[in-house]
Image (cartoon, rainbow over all chains, first blue to last red; front, side, top):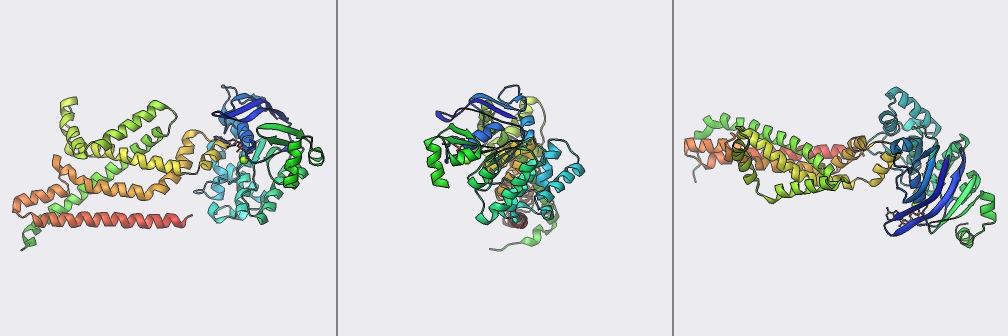
Length: 240
Length: 219
Ligand SMILES: Nc1ncnc2c1ncn2[C@@H]1O[C@H](COP(=O)(O)OP(=O)(O)O)[C@@H](O)[C@H]1O
Ligand SMILES: [Mg+2]
């Protein structure tokens, strides 16, 4: 579903991603972990071209999104993203947040978009908040709305950038539960997270980044019980 | 000091009709100026350098010269340059719109920059193209942030509109001068239009306060 070949990303002289290659199969869930500043967000943001790769190739489905001929907007419609700080549209209701892009971008009628939206709000347990503005919601509720908003485009791939890091501890679980339910639907997911228990439970594979290098790429039981590299061992000692 | 308002009472309807002239002039200039200012602000944040240069140059011209000079140039030079006999009110609205656009483009640009960049990223990640992203997501939030500044800009326009009296528009200011010329009373008509300007500015300020409070309630 996603194939990354020799990806390099620099910001000016600073090389943030160094020759990263990996693959994510359709329906696979990968957890991306690593210390702060190691390039996790940048890697994720390259997959929907919020950051433009400096070198290398990224394929989403059959499309080389790094090719100049690629239609970026089309790629983004197919790759949903959930942000640490939710980024809901504050001037639109929950319903407005969910129906805006499907109507504007996919050209759905209001009725069709609302139907999809209501369906998703039911799934994330927030149907009764449809007419509220985001400022009225708790952090956990905001993030669940943000997940539903991304899903409303019916993407094949979902990217999560530390979706629970900005939440009060008591709200983490409700968001992780929604994500677990999503895993069961078989959608392809890449999740940057510091929730090691969650990564271990849901991920098919763990990518460990350090200093811009993809240091380990292993199934969670292997990675968490017997990390190969010193750096991963040190990291796990600190966080577990 | 003896004031004689009695003598100007017959001229009051004439003066009061100037309110409409001044208001219409201000509203038109504010609307055109706002639309053009929005366009300029988008040029200023564009990735295309010549567009940015043009917008910056444009702004510096209108900020760097006196408004009354711009007004005179447009009014007196247009017939000479393109052979079109421009009316005073056209020259006024045209100049004030261009001038106001220069100032408000700065305000609007700042308002756009102040919108959280996550809003842009969220729109982009949903595949929303640039135009609807700006029109539906970024600009509404930017305008909300800068509403007080835009009201101040409109108030400045309203007061500066008195300058069009110099090219013969029969606005409030000009009507006061006409009445003064007819009655040889200067203080009274000027005082009357002074009060009218003041009341209009206060009204605008109040309306803006109400609007702002209502918007604040929605978030
Ligand atoms: N837009 C940017 N401009 C310059 N440097 C950036 C930018 N975005 C990220 N970086 C740098 O790239 C490195 C990796 O950042 P990031 O991908 O956000 O790390 P992580 O998500 O793992 O904490 C950091 O050193 C960060 O300062
Ligand atoms: Mg990050």
